Image 1 (cartoon, rainbow, N blue to C red):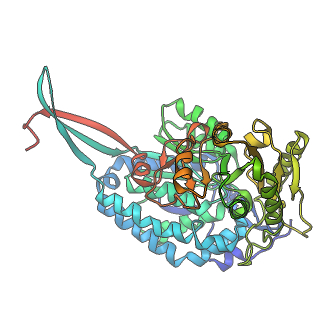
Image 2 (image 1 turned 120 degrees about the horizontal axis):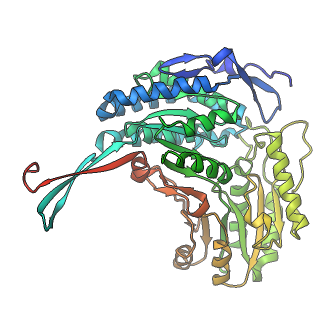
Image 3 (image 1 turned 90 degrees about the vertical axis):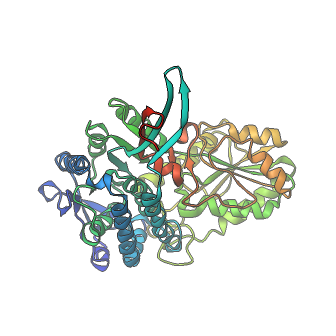
Length: 499
């Protein structure tokens, strides 16, 4: 591959690891290629950390946590997080350039959750750091031994391995490190090898723009799966937080379980959107196609199953086909682009295979289904598959691409049954002309998040987890902060300590 050059120089990127407070090259100055999914060219190199680098990072994090000063000073932690926020604000255009280049993220998305919204959310974690009630007295309890007071103390877990995905690299870094640092933990960040530069730039800001002590934040980019395995298995690590596929999540849970580590994971999804028979079908279908194809379908909470009433099924399919054909795709740096490329050629081929499997199983292709006519870029057309059986592969398995499976239903009960017929439980949606009807149906869906009539759940204060195989534990909100803490209780005779 030819080098497209220049992005790292334009953003002032110093692509190094962060270990023990120092920006350093990987062992032996090893690097690996970072590829632009739009041009298909090599952007440049990223440090390729070894297990020896990981050993140094774990030792640094362990020493920083065991020192105790970071965990003991919530006001200092809040100040450091605000320094990080200010540094990220100043570096916003640098991050934007990196996200467009290495993720293939449409630039319009960087105005929202992918970048700018996430930066502003750091204040929420800083506020929790200094305002959370770490010590809480429970009401006195009377037992045969007498009356006792009980103090609940929330402590940081310790050393945390944070493994982040490629689709929202900046958002996921801040989502995991924000609450982890606010609660007093020390962190080793291991980002996806497909998007290393976002993490390298983050490391540079931590080292150069904040007072975060040495060893509290460590950043390891690397191409080897062995790096992640080491960081999960090491007994000096107390907790693992991971976002990615359910298959990898299972392996992480099994490894972390060997030393009884705390685990928080957001995994896959196969979210259903129910348009009830009195809904505005045209508007609902168009919105679903846009949501499904956003970021080339690379979102775990995307609505990838569309449930249409049989009485309006063909009407909905016609709109879906038109909407999919009209999705603006192409150069992610173009502000009119809605759908950029998939992250890699391997992911593109996986999505095309998913579509082929669906057609082989009896689904009807009504839109897309191919690589578009483009000189470069890992693109797949926005695709709509109709007549999908609820038990079929494409109805059950996550494509992580712009593929919508359309399923007919006869009544509300069948729609709910189809929506719940999944091993996942991450997100969903219901629309109706009656807000009350939509709300009642939504309460019957076994998933962590359900939007009704176009309303949006999102907010940094909204607790979010995954049901069933979509995840373990909470992210966001106070619950997400508490995921990075452990409770202990100390009792005393009533009145002896508490006055």
